Length: 425
Image (cartoon, rainbow, N blue to C red; front, side, top):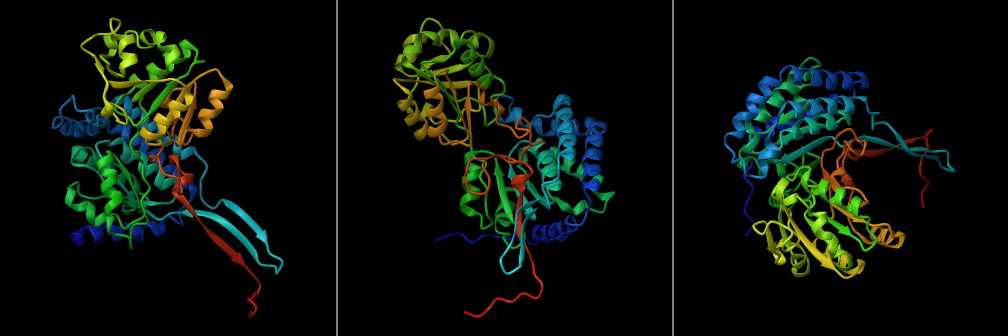
């Protein structure tokens, strides 16, 4: 028997205020939108000490070895990056009121398909307080109000950030277009059941969170799924390209969804493996879970305390840590089969010079982003020129891959006539 959702009235009342405020966004000017975002970029740097103090209150509650610690942490460099992204989003062209199609019918009716805001977007996320800035800037620029539901891990950080955002919005009488729900887990079902108020929910976090939202939400959901990421080192791979790509994809930042989890290597290139991973044991303490062939090749060339024989659970795992599995394949088809079974359809890469291998990989790999001779670390809205991102969609309906401004719009049909009526059959 399905458990009945407990609705918390006070939360619904606050969401209703956000819905009302969202209507005002339809009438504000592009200049106002730019001013809000640039003012916010300036204010966050001016108030960085207070933001970092709030963030430290969250950090002291988390074990530093927890992979989520890196996601939770704010620092001066990251705040400067957030301010830069806010200004980038402010400078982007508006995604609204764009004519996507237009035609005049034989009967004289004029029809236009025009981009419009989605309305009110709910974001459910874990740990990462920078998401609060990213989400607000993209939603605001695309004319959407936003309901935020962060985790307890980032409770103090999110409160400080939203208070900052609302200080800027208040100058334009727009403070209610962003609402931060209480961080208590009991609040989440109320948000997921608010299908008469919230137009779309986007979960950002663990696979467990995403599964919960997908299962319990009556509001339409866009999944930003876990990143189980592979890089295939082909028979035709250039060694130096491969070494650079693998090193960057794995070690640049292990707690993000585009980090490398499994290196797939053609069996004819196993002799390269020790040099591909050279010094990753010393410099990064990278734990490697290798299949039998790869293990035999690495034995004696890699720190034995960090080298383990892989079992099935080591493939199809998003490590979010300084860990990586290695799979040996006999040809590209076996590689594609392995990816098809274990991929989360996020980001996949091939290192190769053979045009046939490259074309085959690009055509047959089912993922939001498919790379050739490049690191999967580039799967990011800012890197893709979107200004920032609201998440990486791993589904295929409405949006796929990094979701920027265009992905936060819908459309409507504008039909203009001159007393037109439709004749009877």
